[in-house]
Image 1 (tube, rainbow, N blue to C red):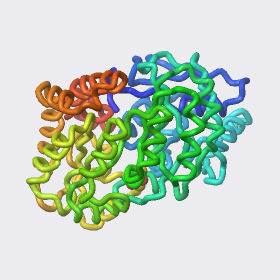
Image 2 (cartoon, rainbow, N blue to C red):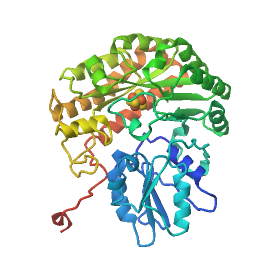
Image 3 (cartoon, protein in one colour):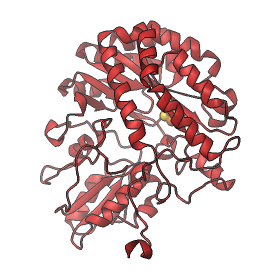
Image 4 (tube, rainbow, N blue to C red):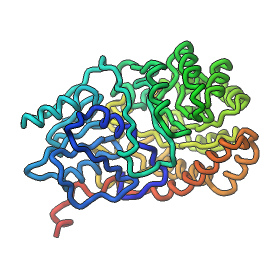
Length: 431
Ligand code: SF4
């Protein structure tokens, strides 16, 4: 998002995917700006960027910097898939949708000297088997492996970008993922699927397949999975130690507004107790600033997270991501503060990008920031650590402490940072 060496960078899954799809005749080097400084020049025939909405401005600035008469700049990833024409102002080609299929076609077109402007992947392509060659990474990423079993989600929450990118859910078989994990030297794995839980039968088959591998793993799941004791017990038995779940709101009206079908705020306490009975830690995410949220939402949500001893949280202001229902609604109602906040030279990380209904944009920004700083204050970390016996299982203790220290450090480093740098220099700036 900006020039800043980050301490919370996860291993980039896309390096392994691109490596798997690239024929061996091509020489390829991966650079992760979150953990290394970029070179002044890149002497390569092709420079490829993976672009999310939050990193779009940075990618555009870097594309301008590295573009020469000879090279080809290509952009892919979520933002390229949703806003391809915007990125074609900075790139020679864009890949819309998954890399599988399109990346290989793009490379062979480059070889012929005729790359197209747009490559569109079709969603029927099976997900590739990951070639996670350790030599492509220049950083250890805390020794945590990153894997993906599925793409897409069975739900359609209106603030979430997933449905914009994937209309259906595609999954690897349990055998495929077990094969990938067998080759991995990492003992701790994070499954980055937006929602690992598709249905009970396939989930149990997967958990039983990975149990003998003796990995410790974490994942993101929807709330419906956490209502089932058998599922939770199989997860624990197969090595799961943490589940990331979107609580989003305690307000039933806000959950309705978000189309958050898996959640009923009334059973949150019961769900949390059930998860703790299975000795799993919780990473809870919350979205604040919906039309039904008023000023008291910050205090109520914060108290809930502390009372329930949640190990790690994200308190996020609602953000209109391009392509989502929220974005269209805000645009229609004339409530967007920036024209494309992601490319604006005024928008800063943590700012509110729309006009909330029942609070000011400043109240939303400050409310979320206060929740984050209070939650990761020394006092609150100690209180949450010692009040929950689940944290004292050795693996959990290590994860709790590390995650809380990193979150404490990263909050203030990121808040208020200008995304990417300056994209639209005026003539006055230049002089
Ligand atoms: S359940 Fe999670 S991943 Fe699925 S649509 Fe909702 S927010 Fe997105």
